[in-house]
Length: 146
Image 1 (cartoon, rainbow, N blue to C red):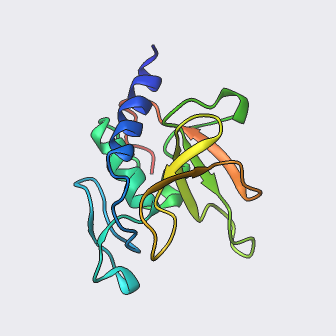
Image 2: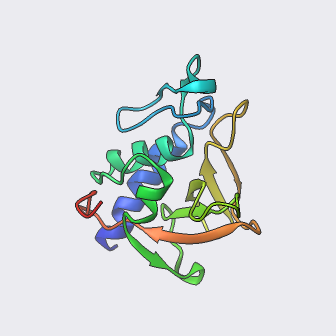
């Protein structure tokens, strides 16, 4: 098993352990669930990037706090090479460039993510029309080039 897949496996396990934690806009980070900002200020939980940041911190990689930082935290890979734990990004707002949502691949068909206000961390299909791309975080890479 490569170092990348080991980091991805650890991150995925950490994210799966958070299933059921409430969504909190701006919430969560390297230390786990946290109170968000704005509409997330009264809810302790995760938003999508907070969950990804937490999961990869558990694997020893600092990937940044926003989807934009996380989009640059590793190498882009084609969908055919997706491994469990890879970050999957979505462009749900075509008016603004870049990713607005991130999850962690469970397998080629599913992801674990914090979907939206009022929901909880859960597993959903990753095959969506707004799939932007996949990033593999390299173990030990951290956020050195952000």
